[in-house]
Length: 268
Image (cartoon, rainbow, N blue to C red; front, side, top):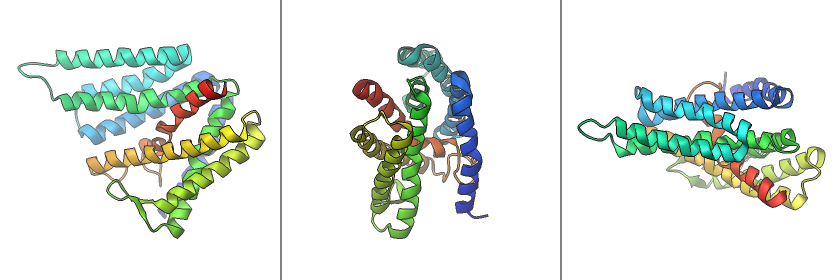
């Protein structure tokens, strides 16, 4: 079975499950789903940056992955931020307590902190989006924003891609594919807004789609840089044809907080 066909089969299976959980699962089940995905993502992240072993660092990241979505569910943005502060304090203290005759490598501490910021904190904002007025529609807006452009970039890049975007980070990304990404995202978001978010103005839709598509691309490139540094092709193997959890979440990580804060600070 080709990778292209596996991508489509995985999407056909995953999309109805996502649709059901978002629409009918309720806020708690949605937060639990996010926590489960983040725990898987943190497992993959730590395997890439640390290799095998390092159970304490792994546990720190997975605990944050479970804590942050639940904090966002219970207490909103304030408790999410407070959970991040508490997690950093705990991680720093554990770093000091592990010191024997010499301190552990400071680089290892920074890998743990970076992972907690990168995944549980940033992606935890998905729970905040779900809690907005008309939050379900906003969650699907995020999905459309991420994957309409992703699909367009894939096909445009394959057919017309010539100029490499950042070959040292991702050999497959092209300038033409990025332009297709932006165009596909804007078109997809405008169509979605017409039917499901009519209260969102066309101008705000274009701004969200344009800037959001760039953040999606940056998120994808950032994860590619992590994989390139770790010398792995995929972060994992959970989703056939797509790789691991991180390979599916990467384009959402930077974009989700942007959508939340744009909606709460600019639109509302």
